[in-house]
Image 1 (cartoon, each protein chain N blue to C red):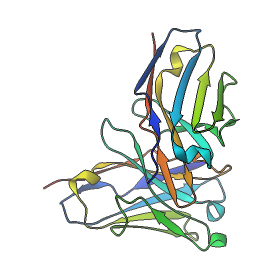
Image 2: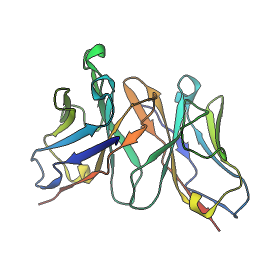
Image 3: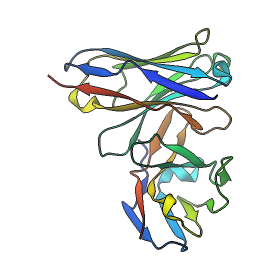
Image 4: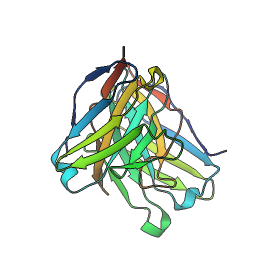
Length: 120
Length: 106
C-alpha cells in the first residue's frame, strides 16, 4: 500500500524545537521529491518547503516564513523524511502534512498529518 | 513572493457545473495543480499540470489555464463534491497555494 505516515507532533513552548518524521512505503521514496505543507486550524494550506532526491543533490527550498528556522532532511535508507523546526513561534501552530511527488510533478500522495501546537 | 487568488466560496445545485478560478502572475510561466480537501481529511490531488486528471478522478473534473488564470471545472456536480479546493503553482524553489474555495452543493 502506498502511504506516508507522519509522527512527532505535540505541544512545545515558544522558542522551542521539534522534529517531525514522515515514513514512506509502497513507492520509490529515494526518487521522489518530498514536501511539507501546513494548515492552521480553519485556515488554508501553506507550503513549508521541500527536499529533492539524491539525483538532484538533495536540494532544499523553504517558504520565507520558515527559512532559517526549519530544516528538511531525508534518509533514503529508512524511507523517511524529516522536518526539524527550531525557534518555534505561536504562529507555527498547525497540522503538518508531508507529501510527495510520487508519480507526477504534483503532490500526489499525502500523509494524514500531525498536529504541532506552540504555546506556553 | 508569489500570490494566488481564489474566491472564498462558490455555490451550485446538484447537476449543475461549478467553475472555480485561481489567478496570479505565477500562472503565466508555471503549471497549476488542484487539490480537494474534505473536512478532517488530508488534501487529494485532482488536476495536475493545468489540465491532467489524476488517475481515479472522475471525468467530471477538468482543468484549463488561460493567461494568468487557471480554472477547475466540475460538471454534473454531486453532493459528494462539496469540499474546499486549492490551487497550487510556483517554480522549483517556491510553491504557493491559493487561499482556497469552499464549494457548497445546495
